[in-house]
Image (cartoon, rainbow, N blue to C red; front, side):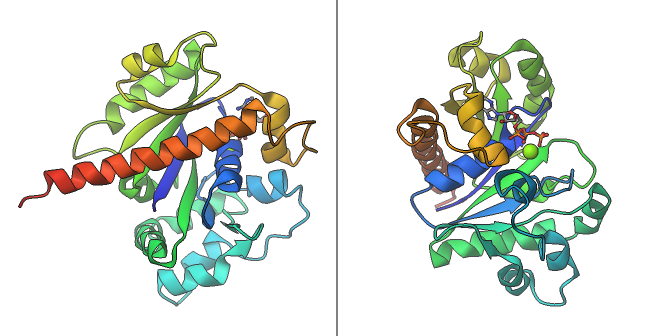
Length: 254
Ligand SMILES: Nc1ncnc2c1ncn2[C@@H]1O[C@H](COP(=O)(O)OP(=O)(O)OP(=O)(O)O)[C@@H](O)[C@H]1O
Ligand SMILES: [Mg+2]
């Protein structure tokens, strides 16, 4: 199906938790790529609670003499039967070493589609040194994660103006809104940021903590509003990618 990138403008709105949550609700095999240049592998330390040591990740991929596609196979680690992970850097200082890896990695990730695997990228916060720009630009869908409050929308606004420029920005941009209606509705957020709200998730700190730091799932987690929101978000993201591909076919010269 696709390479989907999640990123934010500021304020830790929930990119990593949402990326992990979407992966665990994804209906097909999916690869999570931790491309946040902040370092420290938030997924191994958070969702996995440090139970899994870091033994390979993006840095080993960057240092490998193999092609990006072959090196990728060596650094993928299973998290569940359906979800695998490429861990990010251990420190922010390593992120600079990844500068030349994003482009070949982007091609290698797109090739995974042939093997029936989709990709969800946690691209961290925009504008950081070592940010995976080429992945953000080349993904089938790049979603700016934002809360529905004024500080979050205000920070997202300046980036939204940049990334929605045709030809210079993301191929297929959209918003993933957390806490819709707190206080702004998705129509208002979409209008201000000039991008469609592709999906929204409830503001549910207890449920989100399961994917953020490996908390024990609360009662009725699997059937509760947060997981139902993730399941609906998966469908919406898939439809958004399909629409983007259809538009590309329509635009192609005949
Ligand atoms: N849908 C949600 N509802 C409520 N709280 C959430 C939600 N998603 C994430 N959170 C909480 O928000 C906090 C930040 O989450 P997370 O680390 O996923 O954000 P982030 O955008 O990846 O941050 P950073 O930019 O620091 O990497 C955590 O406490 C997490 O539990
Ligand atoms: Mg994060």
